[in-house]
Image (cartoon, rainbow over all chains, first blue to last red; front, side, top):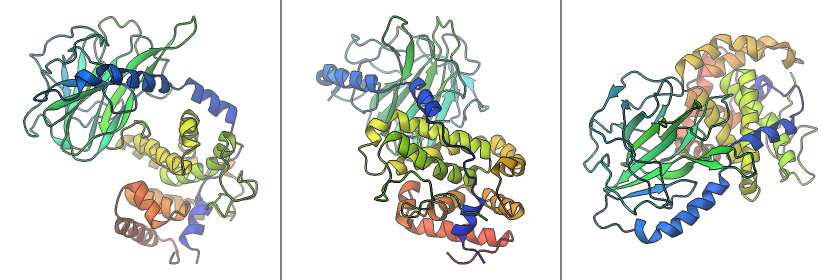
Length: 256
Length: 187
């Protein structure tokens, strides 16, 4: 009678051809690079250090792009949310239960490093977990069928630790410079930190862009988390993407 | 039946890319070539879809390439690769319908002729069928513990659960395999 190890090894598929490392390297080269944004995040941390830390009374917003959890740049208010998803959405498979949410101010401008240090956050929750933030391990949203200038979000009260990341469907087209923005708002003890994707321009005269943004281990149990994806008003090229936060999300824990 | 997948670091197959000292090679190409059969086997058992397993294994290695600067200096890059591979697979299976489709077709994809060389395809298929029907956590614990030959502590670390949970999951998994008709001796 075989033991379980032998049984599994005999049943496991084996390579029928050698690994094509050239193809692997080529695909890796086409992946979004994050090192530059990490460096920018560090630079932003220096700029924002004097204003982003120790905000009296809490409630301020620190914005981060990149892999560390240091505040990077301050984002202007862009909190319009047209759709609230129940938080169980899966990749490219929007869940039912979306509904309109009125009363939010329209986006003011795109994120800017020269924005004021701190702005009130109309969505920043200050109360205990509620129906608006149901306890969950994670949630994700995508921009399928999302109109220009509109947003979609999901909210949850974190039950486990985690991070955030964005994702794009298999075989997606290269991201355009007007790709949607994924923002993750993490509220803890009345203070909200916002993590957001950025379009980073590649070097060279071609002027192509790539997406950047993810952070490991920034969510703790009890945090109020909102994931928002926003389609730019002036999007000319449709870029399919989504974002998620919570358990199994982060830079080393890819999304779908 | 043949056994062609490296089971552990010190029990590699001929042709594996390990160096003479038995340690995993630290150059990127060598690391990827050594990891590929390991990841393919692991994902093949986990997903029950050879094509998907190949895609996920290669995507894992793409991410290894992207992060090699950090991984090269880390103590355990294969652990990182294992975790990424499982997360990719889990993400793929988040949609129940996708998983159902895979289960419906697993027999075809997993017994494709290019898998060749098997002397008992029906037994292979029976094992794959039984494994893929295990609950996800049991399946993951089983593959990590007995295909990758990781210790209980290592599996617990990867699955972020107590060691006792790993023992329970693997015990239940083997019990399920036996109930499905497989003859399995005690590990």
